Picture 1: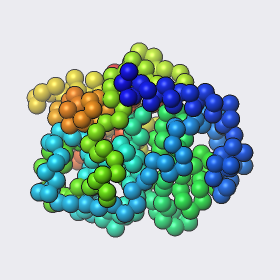
Picture 2: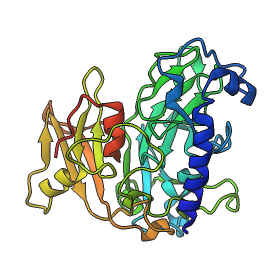
Picture 3: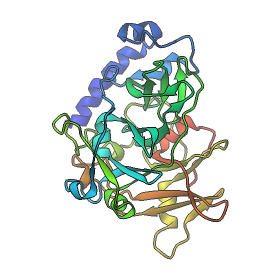
Picture 4: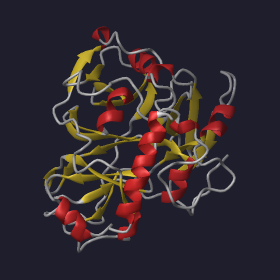
Length: 335
């Protein structure tokens, strides 16, 4: 039996117990004494234990970086979250984030939270500035729709990583502002930002960095830790791209449709609703093989607003179809 299967069976056992005990009294006993559970927008039964306790998956709060020339242990195809603000370009390898899920950083003078949820393959960057001050985020150890539930250390409100919305606590209903970022190969990042810097572990022996603890997860027929409705007409674990604009419904497009539209250099990019989506080969899946660098090629997507003529990068997320459907059931996934 694979390590992933053993872990999932153990976790499902935990879920069977905690599903009946998903309530604030239990969570207060777990250490959430400062969370205002009188304020929530969800049903308590939607919250599941992911296994680890509060901060059991430790965020990186004092990130360390090196130059490209020093990052000789990263393969060209390894996936990184690319973030550039005011000339400050940084790469956050999923081989590190898969073990920590949140990096509290300051890029180009802007406090940001760089986040990754492995069970959703969701990588989102948020601005941490708020009228209450600069927020710092950690992991609750909880899941909703298989997605990471974060918390801020200022009020201990709970936030949905996929949407950036506070779902429990004093910050209820607040939404974090997203920063345009891209999931791309390390080679693509190095070519685009020759002066960029790369996140490295503070303690290289703390975890099996560069290794995937969820071997074969994105080749599964169905997600293991999800009990909601499945999308129609598309495999639950198919990759989709969710493009977000302030004040507008997300545009959700299957990766296959984008790849088909940009099959070769002479093809026309996928365009819809003033949005241009392109696909380029050369990025390994972080959720396929034991060694992330050996994962199958899932390619890199870029998203642009073309409403004014000149392409402007848009915030977007590459996730699974079941996740997009869970959070946006009213929006059809374009294929």
